[in-house]
Length: 482
Image 1 (cartoon, rainbow, N blue to C red):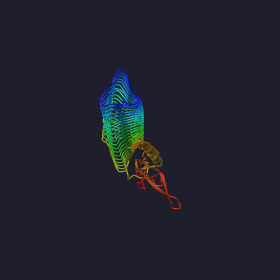
Image 2: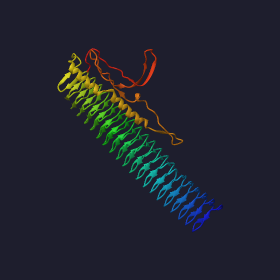
Image 3: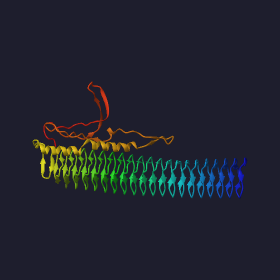
Image 4: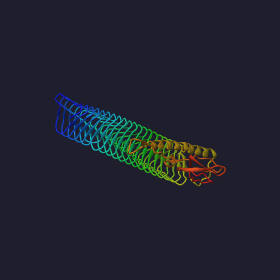
């Protein structure tokens, strides 16, 4: 002991301990083994510092705190109550560790607060204004920072990151390379793992599972026993619950509800106010939007599209490039395939439509060999088609999904700098071009994956237009291709 250290009360200093500087050791504190205390450290009450622990700076240690191992406590850290600090911990800044917290490794700094029956071990980092309390556990190389909160019986491990204003509580478990940020909340028995990302104001709870590279953003909610995985993206006001599953490259946006045992997968897209329920399956490159409802054992796949107020029930199968829209209803064991279209107030049950078959009102079927309908009927058809597949709707979907993708944050491994990768809209979703009326009724340029195009001016100079898309047409030039 040397310097101006102040030892008084019933404090005990023994072994090869070094106490120096302006340190104060008082109360019933015990310093022994190879511990080192210096700076303006203040150790009081029944605290113990021993083994190879080092305490310095303006640290305050009180209560029944137990500091040992190779722990380093410095700056203005405050350790109190029955906290136990050991292993290779580093605790500094203005961090507070109290109650029955057990810290067996890792780095805690900034204004972090660790309270309750907390267990922290391995090499996690907790910093910023993060708070860990109640009976939470932080293991592995997990990072909790900014204004994040982890409490209840929650467990964060692996290389998971919880940051910004995210809350993890209840029995939730986050692990792998998962990221939870924004104002998102994970609770109940929910699990988020692999490289999944939860952001914005998303809520994941009950027994929900989010994994793979899935991204949940906006105000989306996933709960009950629902699962979202693969490269699936959900955002805005989407609700996924029951035993529903969304996976592969599926994209869901708007106020969509997916529930019961429904599945959406492959490259399927569902947006606006559509509802998918029962054992329905939406897959392939299918698109479902508007106020459409799909339930029971319905299957919609390939490049089929369902929109407006269409309702599909029973064991119906919709595939190819079929279009169902308006107030149409498909029931029973119906099969709608190829370029077939059902729209208007048509209601079909147990029928098979293919090729260019069209139903626009109950009981009226127009096949590909018929001549052009009267002008009024054609105009009705085209107005419906235009409304259903207006390009602006799809572009709005593009924008929504792109915004969520751009919220996907990659952090620099060396510091907390946030890198925001920009995503090109054009390669993410489909687009539709408005139907137009030609002299012989050229119709419907089909949905196709959007691609950016180069536009030339009158002098044949190339102009890059990042807002332009090209859509490959399928046209029958001399008859109504419906």
